[in-house]
Image (cartoon, rainbow, N blue to C red; front, side, top):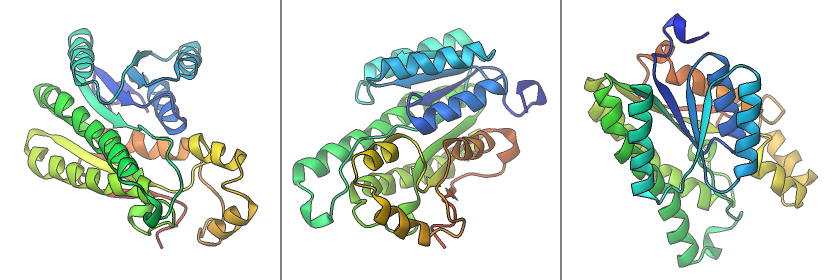
Length: 259
């Protein structure tokens, strides 16, 4: 699959959070198919640079930009510059992630609640607010948001992850409902345990120990955890013309966790 197949138009795909495990896999898959990619990162410049070098070495086209999700003016400038440089922004992938504690609802403090919701929900709103006019101006486009399988089957201690995602899902549905007539689609991927990013850190720290992993695997018909490339494959599909009649959906990539 590549751009000349008509599955992605000319222009650029913008990946928010592309330096993370899932985000970098999405960048790599898009670039490998001939799509121009620009990825944002928050603070991990070394990983973002390393990813970009690997993609370019393989013949792909990618740019990177430092951006905080609460920097609305910086986001507006980036998007305007990309639209001018590439002529069109056709796809927006939202793979931002936050290093939050695994915690019971009863132990969440007001400060934690406000900080996490503001960072996640308002960050995604800023993305939509900034990019939607450009997608419409270009004749349409696609949003793909990386969400959580815990929206379909609540995972204990996951409240600070899943609560913001629930609000974002309504935003995704709103885009799908109201902007479909402008050929703008919006979908989410409900991911389960993926062997990358925060999972690997929590595994190293002993939070996700052997007992935890054993219990989770019992809930997975496929009896294994997922790979970032498996999420990227679904993202690539949803952003492409192969999914041209799919919008407003939350599609699991979770090894059957939600069954």
